[in-house]
Length: 394
Ligand code: FEO
Image (cartoon, protein in one colour):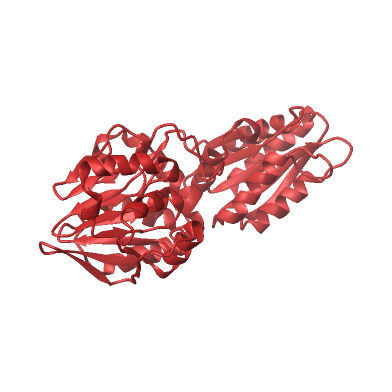
């Protein structure tokens, strides 16, 4: 499959309809994904990024239907992660001397992955590459968005930004333009992508966007490396990123728990009731981690102004689903959010304090916790209700 993005730009990537987990099991992809690669044809011909390695041969076969591989003058590697560079070995086996334009860290990463000494051309922000017909690429380094090697490539003359991971989504759809897909689905996948991948780099996201905006370049289209191409008002996703990068939160509180014999679940339900009774305007969401998708839960954490995390005590600590989520939240470095812990225990406690400690380590403003013993009594559940009211008032 290939299609025209513009008269001089052809999408030559891969729609991965069957992908359900990305980065191993780090990121769930309920809607699949795509690995977007673009062929830019002016007097010179450039290929921007490739696809994930399992689809390398399919990619080459499709690319050959579009162009004689020997007519490709330049390869642009905006990012070395193998979902974009995975077809380079197969491609370079066919056209071994073709120059690859990437950052200095890109060279390190590509050599690290593939152990090849290809014809690398290191570029920095502001470097250009002439394509003829009055068109040229302008390179923009984007370190830690989201890898040290990441960069973007701007096609001057067409005002198209090839942004790689930035502004993308893991979203396979029949229509690959932002104005042709379900808008709610698109927003949800963009938000999930930002929350689960870019949150730790929010300060850099904002700084890089302001830097690029200061160039005052026209922008007609953003061609991402995953999901849709932003051709209808591409500035909307840039503005959305700025909002998400600014300690984003909605009027939402999220309860996250695991439970052994339903004591902690009953506490969660009572706390929820208390929050709702004190502030009906607040959206409350509740997840049993053992049966929830962790990336969907983390997306809700990103949206929340506060979270409550609960677990019964087992072996003086918490249940493993809760521990794993707290570790992931530590890495994501959410900012400006409140948190509290809760949980029931039988013979001895421990989980509530341990969760509070881990929440603090993850950067949350922790304000107390609540414990119950065995199956919570009506009195204990009343205390949970009151705790929920206090949480809402805070
Ligand atoms: Fe889509 Fe960081 O790779």
